[in-house]
Amino acid sequence: MKSFTQRNDPYFGLPGNQSSGKLSFLRFLFRYPVFLLAFGPPIFRDNAGIDVTKGKIDVWAFVQVAWVGLIAVRAVYSLSSSHTILIPKQVRSILRLFFILGLLFLASAEYSPSRLASAAYAIFYLLTLICVAEFVVDSYRNPPDWMQCLFHLRFMFLLLFLLVLCTIPFRPMMVMAVIPGVGIRLSGGAVASITVICPLTVIISAYTFLFSLESKARSIIFFMIGMAGTLLAQSRGCEIALLASLALVAFLWATSGKRSSYLFLAASFASVLLGGVVLAIIGGGRIWSLFNRGGDTADIESASGRTDIWKFVFQYCMAHPLGMGYVAGFRIIFRQYFALGLQFEVTRIGNAHNAFMDVLAGAGWPALAVYVVLLVKIVALGWRYARKRSIFSISSELPPRHALRCSLALLVYCLISGLTAADFVVPLKAPFYLQFVIIAMILGMSARMLAASRVRPAHLQE
Image (tube, rainbow, N blue to C red; front, side, top):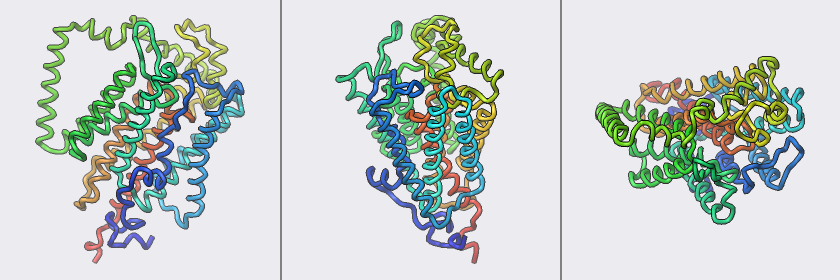
């Protein structure tokens, strides 16, 4: 690794030369095609979708396969043509665990009620993993402008949100639903997941506003757009996850200096007072009813019937430790045990409505253990360098540190939201690819900062 002593590298001689710098949106996507996965792509299909476990496919299924396949083929070609592949061992261990998890998913096809479907989903998982690995290798050699990655990602979210809004006049039921007692819920359907793209837009905008990383007016406008979409989605899980992520962003800002700490404490105190006044005027009962969309106690306690599903998965996997078969197994087996007193049509349930439970249902306890360890290692690695101040004070370190912190806040949203939604672990679902793109950014930035922490600056080597 002789290139480690190059003086012209802003990271004290890491592989590669200068960062790729600022790129236009289209050039950025061509340069780092893994971000194309964040588009989904948009699928103009009714919410019910197509159940491949029954052998039903449509033209959009071919579009999805081609979309992921082309990006993965490009990644494979890029990796195979690389002369050297340099990744720090901490990041390699995480990628290795991802690969092991993929093999467990693939092995689950052997006992799945629909072997072909489970194997196909496992292959899509592995293809996505290849795209992530290629991005980590590429960004380790020639890093992008990391904040620009977040800005372009937010721009993609805004484009998808606009696409959802443009779909409403033509096919409203494709992207929204009318729920008795709740009203109109804008979900985005298969066009784009509003419960993911809008909260992530809010988080990025809140972070850039607090740390003054862009125009204040732009941050506020994008924040309001994202918040409007989040409220239109009317999802309690989404709102709770967003609140937790914004609390993390506020905490990171508060720890950046004394002035920020004082302002944070003052704002917290003012929020408590304001909350008390609102509670006294409106009443706790009305606020609770509004937050729960008028749901009764039984509905709230069962998380809209989710706890019954989780209980079924847990009991089944206690008797069958290896699970039901990746993705397809739950869809088929759950229908055979639908007499659970649920208040909705179980034939339309495609997953366990919990990312962790869905991994458990797919490939059993070994897969769940690997998945949990994976997430812990990713968060621990990212947080280690998000909070660490390098002993070498260099201006080029600050942008990736901000980008790493913001990316961790995005990942926290995905993980908390995953407690009530399984799309983050189901291939061919847009949230699945969004979470992988965020993880790819965290691993890429962590790899660069890992190497930077081990290499002395050139003027100290003389």
